[in-house]
Length: 248
Ligand SMILES: [Zn+2]
Image (tube, rainbow, N blue to C red; front, side):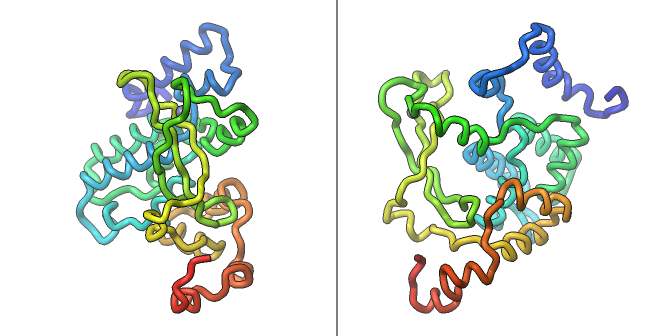
């Protein structure tokens, strides 16, 4: 790591991990990992990153303001094994290198690798862990749910998420619990069509993701995507649906 041009920026991260190791207290519980920020970027945090990129990269056909929901979600899926802090550092570094165009997911991952940061516990795994536990509000009392938006589940079906934004005070983090709910009517216009395997692969390729990353994403992030043939079997032909104007 001594030859890394990013040594300076790495120090806070290494320092943090160093402290943990020095204390001889290996992080064991998910709560401790969360507290130390050693969890994957959340959907909200990713949208903040997209916002950050949108403001700074306005040139080109593929500027962040033109990214589709599918692209933004695919990038999120690809980056979910890194922390918000590290992804933020990576995109800031990429920007400070004077790039003219917004980085794609593989370029962000390339920077994360150059920074030498480690993957962390993804939100997906975190959620799976918590689903067994009680859904008590971290901020006390009842959750205060707000609409988070649409995401494709591992089968490629769009599901609507709510999150709890309740916090004890402005200085503390929000509870951050998430749940899947029936979408409100006001959000139906934004419901994305189901994702299928070939479309996901095409989108990922279109974003410039290397093959090995796509190969990794499919079993890890999207283990049960339907093939196009299976999609048609379940949902009918996409064009026919458009004519009928139905989504289900
Ligand atoms: Zn809550």
